[in-house]
Length: 374
Image 1 (cartoon, rainbow, N blue to C red):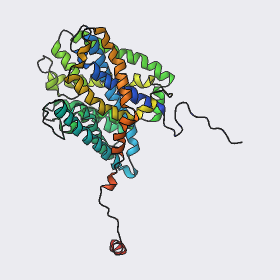
Image 2: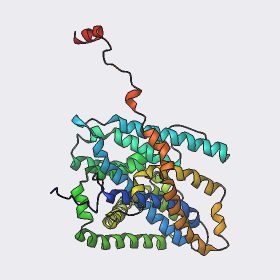
Image 3: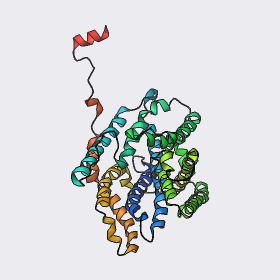
Image 4: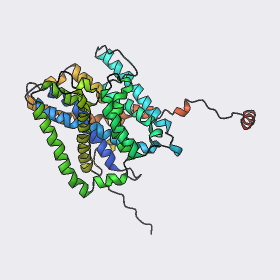
């Protein structure tokens, strides 16, 4: 009799692990939620609570998504350490599509004058620009030992904050600042992941997670009386400001800027570890949508821009307690934008092959083949 092969509860028939798709779906939901609650941290009785939640979410979601992106980047290094150009090209296509359509939405629909530039990513699109940078440098990184590359990446990430002229060209400042997360993911192994979500790993994550959350509570309490310093904390978290901008109008010496970035790295690492330790490993109703997070990341941006422009969040002002309803609303938005119809345009873009756009250098006839041999 033929042996019956039992289906793993942690992977589909093709061996795709549910764990990573679960993590990506939850993280992209947190991206949507952070944008949804961002106005609530600016006014109202519960603004301190929403500020705390916003800070925790923003310290977790992008560093963790970048870390996972780095982990899967290994698949796109070919023989001899060469990058598979198709992957970089696909991200370029996604970026071009998003940059143009978001720019048109802002100007033609919202009536804003943004001074459109193809090389100045519109808000959330910085992540796509960074992916292009990170993937492009993989062949070089792959030739350097991790024990050398990782410290160098962290030093550069902290040092770039002192550069006041780096600008926002293709989000290069953010690409350098957030690069350690991508690099750590690149060097991570499946065995390391298994240790994180093991029983011991989960037990260890409890004090780490509580300590990280406790630090955020202390930050909220300490900086509450100092509005300008509270803004500084937010700018450290978003990673797109130099130290002079972060500590503008405050008495904090700019020279200590690297310490704030180091603290951010440590807190992000603690939250990421805790999150990955408790991410479900089995299949759930949302699991299959974790493969379509990029569509959510780009498409929800249009909705968020209109949300802020038309101040839709003010509908909760007469009943502030209903602000918490934004959580299921954010989940529904994440779920809807993860469905196949919304993913379809990105699937089509991903199917454009760069090989079809390149000149074919193969000999086309016998005469050319003879010349090629000579």
